[in-house]
Image 1 (cartoon, rainbow, N blue to C red):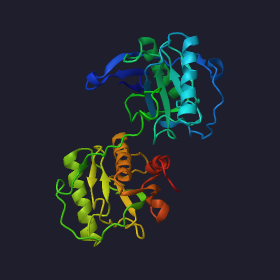
Image 2 (image 1 turned 180 degrees about the vertical axis):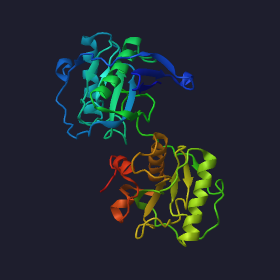
Image 3 (image 1 turned 60 degrees about the horizontal axis):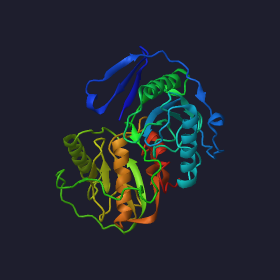
Image 4 (image 1 turned 120 degrees about the vertical axis):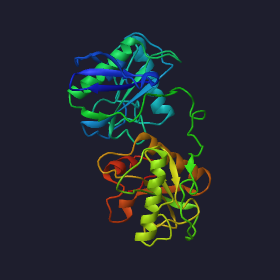
Length: 355
């Protein structure tokens, strides 16, 4: 895996591998230059049906690696990209190839859905990020130096032309897509996330009403105030939130069924079977999931978002949540700014969202 970061003050591009993540490797000074883009027409794209617009410049960059589409020249890379687009449209039933741009092992940039259209590359980020992908390397091999250099140039060009914010975030390391594995073999993971229990974060004893299961809603909120990114810090924060609900708001317990920290862990609130006190008229029929922190301008990190999505999948698989549930933000059902605009923009792309 690799993470690319452009240091815009000096026009330098850094490539970091996990083994060298603590000591980033300076790979050279890059003057943003234009590599001729292989347009959709040139690589023979079929007509897609993606219409959702990106608001530019975007603040996030996501990079993927698609192994198993080996190619080293424009003719063969164009053929491989047509295969990938066909798979995304006809097998995955997406509106087009998933990425905004792709980089081949021939060192060229290939136009996906382009700069202005939302891709389908990363749930929770496709509507607020550019998705770039490596393709063309052999299964089990890294992109070659030409592809790595081309990716660096593509990122610098995106910043230079105003498509990508000069202060962009890269929330995810490069992710590999097993693009040609059948959906039956590569379906969603069904495991449940690791949950920090009440006893582990030293909850106070309480007696609250029971849930009406299976729940019909997932209700997403944020707690406001500070966030946490380490286990001890998050346990302390959950205790403080419980004390606030019980001592200041006179609630029978902490307000949420589960809470999610920036450490990527899920913390048991009232749990599956007991009502929270997060939203009047919904406490007995909605699982209340709260992200710890304030997410008005910047969303939770990728680890927290994945933990929440895994928890929702777990709830449906174990029967705590009805399969045809609706997902809403707290601001959809009451007058509040929670869960914050940045987080709301992400959950609005999740399955079962209902405005």
